[in-house]
Length: 232
Image 1 (spheres, rainbow, N blue to C red):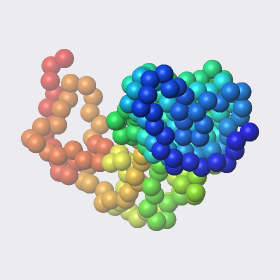
Image 2 (cartoon, helix red, strand yellow):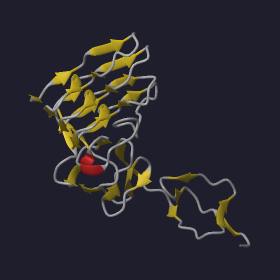
Image 3 (cartoon, rainbow, N blue to C red):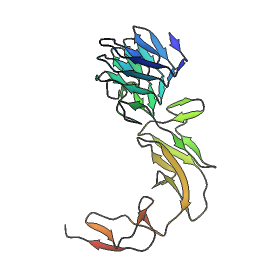
Image 4 (cartoon, rainbow, N blue to C red):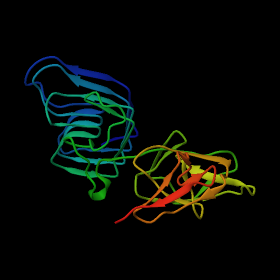
């Protein structure tokens, strides 16, 4: 059993057929690795396989682990922010802002070049930045957390608690928050409060706002636009 371990190691291979490199372990042969955190750099310049932020090759159990800003580089398809190859059990493992094969903040790279959705085996998570006076009402706890930083996976409903004055509107990544609730996107969220623009329009198909009026804040506009209907 390896638990509550943190690694920021640099692990590299320059030879051929030198397999199984990971931020916590290279090859997990039937063991259990849980609640560990990796910010490791794991790379290969030779013909090798199985490179992972937590484990290169897993035939045991990986549970509750988190890769944060790990860097994984491999010429093979057996790579992942969590595990390079898995023949065991993965559950509640997450990764945040990892660079995989040169792509910063990569997603879809949890294990063997893909995410493992079952039991949240290897999934990306993101952060939410709130202004003063805002708090998260639900979910009651984050998807994962480390050192007071909370992480949330895409698709969950986030309900906020806040009070803002009339004439103001709350935005999540420049999209208006309705009923103090938004769905977590597959990216970090920055919540901010701005002055509410003049008007909001929801247009049906075949309608378009013209005259160069700037659209801002998820459908709000600054001035009254000209609306043109086109033939279907």
